[in-house]
Length: 105
Image 1 (cartoon, helix red, strand yellow):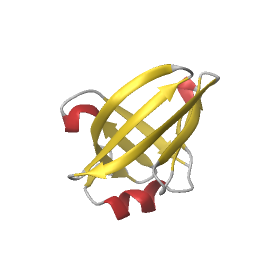
Image 2 (cartoon, helix red, strand yellow):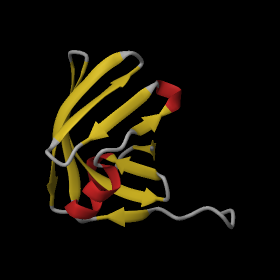
Image 3 (cartoon, one colour):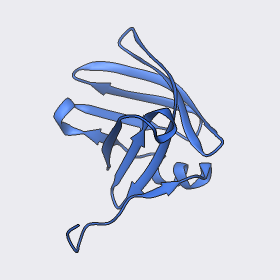
């Protein structure tokens, strides 16, 4: 790991998660993806020109969300959340599946 790279650290507390994301844009530029995950339990954003909406809760140390991408349901899933500087990583299936790393802006 490069000397300036920070390791990802797990977020297991709802308040720490909200502090990291509320009022900020979570982005993956390659997909034109921007998400806003708000303290009130709502999710809003866009990806490749189409709207994203959803809701989330914090359950047993995991971010659990239900989303819709322009009429396509994205099934409910609880995800491991980790933070490293201005990057946040969501790993599906409570950390046992694939992951996405988003920039916090």
